[in-house]
Image (cartoon, rainbow, N blue to C red; front, side):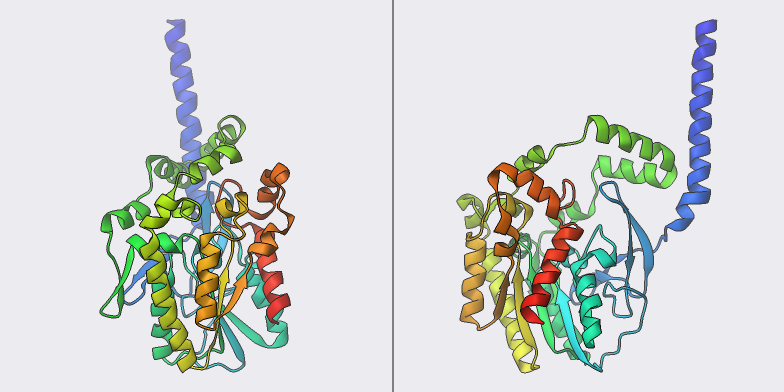
Length: 358
């Protein structure tokens, strides 16, 4: 009888705690988060950010960060109307999630840092980068806005190592629109796994419980960086730069990337826009010290052939490479167990571009 009573008390207390957590989350935490969908499909260039939003995003890796867009659906420092006509020298940046600056506040991203510094010189910086973009989308999006009468003077295209896979097996240009040829893969990208769904549920409904469990996971079950790198090295998306088998499969990705970038180059010349191509090391390339990999060689050759200004950030990032302290150096520039740069990595990009171009 006493044993049953204890079980009843434990269940009662647990239920009460979860109920209080649920009420607290609904009343105090959830109102902070805007339910507005951040990423939307686009009829021409596949997907975009919704214009004029200001919302708090959450990730179990870094916690909370704020994302704001302007009237064009470009990530920005504030909600503001962006005229199609330029009043001063205008620069546009485009790339994927690294350029969008996922997991970071605007001020901690290299577009935000460039905007802050160049605005003092009366230069406007706009960030058209969005997660899961690649060269075919870079071309289609820039063309779309130029056709609408959007004016700017200079374009920086940030090529990510993941772009090659996207161009090899996901995106194609058909009837002047971007389509996904691998619907199953695209759906897999959209669908979260069980753990992610559980995390999302706990965060939105049992916030205190979520943070307690997260702390326990960090203390006892957190994956170390070496294991993360081992798993990353198994992914064709990243290992093709040093794996000949993966490279052979992804050669089409390079071919399609060069085709779209050639079209973009012609488009820029036609509109008197200076084009810059920027390459930077992925986490795995950084770890392997791939300062002259096939990825670097291919983009160097392409840029030289087409008289495009190439900004190669590999030497800058790998300048202090030391195999003995590589994990420590990785932590300096990359988010914890993530392929994206942290604030320091973004600052390195911003500082170099400012120093070499302005």
